[in-house]
Length: 410
Image (tube, rainbow, N blue to C red; front, side, top):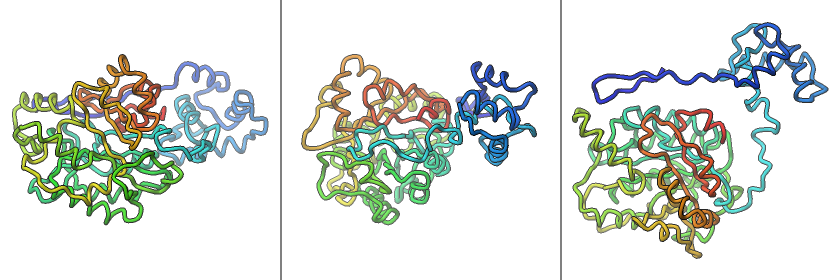
């Protein structure tokens, strides 16, 4: 059961949807099983009759059942073998893959923009988007599932002398950035040697940006991919980037430009510092923040910044492009001299496909396009990724905390 606090007044509990076998699987199961469990002989006959494996033996089938007993996610509860739901989960597991799951058969020597990239959203959250804990545990779990893009939201800590990771303007509890970075370093390449991209949503002063640069260099060392030039004409290939960490965020110059026209009082860490504000205030802040969460809401500390931390800028090989408000056509213009990353919410993207479908596809031929869930998905639900893939979006960011059936498509 998952529990969520609603407006500080009451809690609602939700039971996760059961992973039940579809009718087609149940029908096949009934063809080979008379009782309630599929034993070794029934499994052997299934391999021979349905999967066409004439060499299948009873011993091999029993070995599969025995091995499966050791796997938590495929736990066999019947002593005699698989139940119908366990049989279903086995069929769609890596253990029954047509091809070895860890072997790459595709050509991985084209630019990075030619590939779909397994992308997480708010990778540090353990549950819902409003009040769950921030932790490195979901980051580690995502990397074990071969997620290649990890998102971190960076905010000053309560004393403004260090950097925390949390979902700003909400009640999520923070975690220190350095702990997340160390976990990424330890687990980045345990399941895949292809590059890990860390997308940073930056709400920091230049002084803290410089501190982040120091953390990145100290933590990742030579694993960190950097370039001598300020921009890339094309992205390197996944093969060239094996076992490298890449940072993607707005360069400091664009970060400051996005602040200079706002003229607002600093928002800071409202949700974090004022946990006992009334429900209406929280709800208003949340809806306002989530509409343009990723690109427009980073207010910084409101001070005038006269110095840019060059150390930070030099660590950003995948620069995020600033939105041109009300002018998507300009945002999607292609610069033949450099490549970039551009982000749209799922609603912005759906609207864009109606008028700018061709421009989106043309943009993704060289550049990276990232789509992220709309702000109303406070329970960490997900949208359907197919529309993004059809238009060439390489980074279709999903909440890895839920919706296993969509995540399984990746």
